[in-house]
Image (cartoon, rainbow, N blue to C red):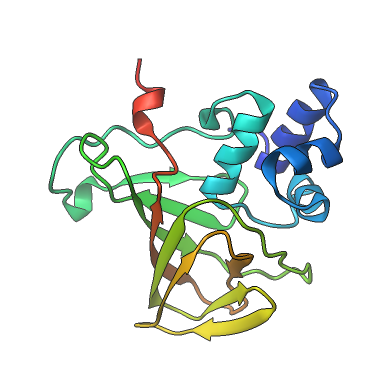
Length: 191
């Protein structure tokens, strides 16, 4: 992928002559958040990116390559497929069985440090999320509160609550996340 997600988003949105306000209304994401995303100043959850892709009439793979199909019930550590969102600070490892799992998406996510001063904007979407911290300190924004989660801590929320997270330390953060409903349907990408 040669361009950042934000640049691709802006190019696609403007080519469709859609304003940020119109995209905001279609995705239920704030204009401020979408503007920051287009400028590469904030990260995006895969579920929100899929929502944006749907609103713009493209497949999620428009923004990056989908993970390789995994039909095995057991995934060995050396078989894990990486889905790297380039020019971002998030590295996604798809841990799910793409053939049998229809209602949830399990990922291990590595979050690189955030050295910017940009404010993280909480957003909401349909579904629910479970996040478990494996390593590092994860900063979670939930509604109007900020929490620091440490290794062994977890959070389980209804995704319709405004939320977001980031890494404000100088070390990596690794988390396990499960999203429901499934946010990246590999079956849609297989011909």
